[in-house]
Amino acid sequence: MILELVTMSVKPELKAEFEETYRQASPLMSRARGNLGHELKRCVETDGRYILLIKWATIEDHLQGFRGSPDHAEWQRRMHPFYAAKSFIEHYEAV
Image (cartoon, rainbow, N blue to C red; front, side):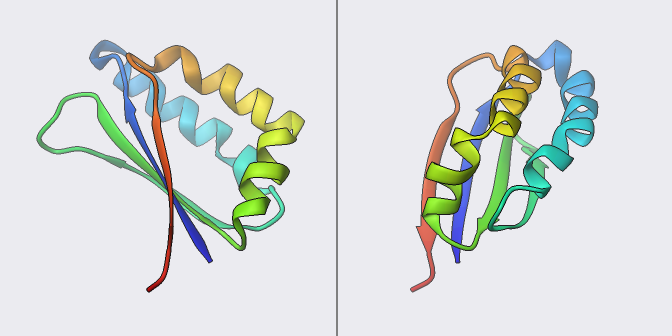
């Protein structure tokens, strides 16, 4: 299992709209091959900072599967307008 961690900075004035758009767009990621679940977390200390935690069966499910899909293009179209800066993405594996 691979854990993808995405750190996002969202324009503070758009937080409520961002969170609602995430709820609406969430099925795009849920139906991706190898997606084992995902959740969005809001930072308590930094206004507009979020992390998205996504569990993938394999890294290829994310990099070659979801990223190359029409659902990923739609995810980007919906979510990226809210970002105040480029997202930071890392992948982790169990030790």
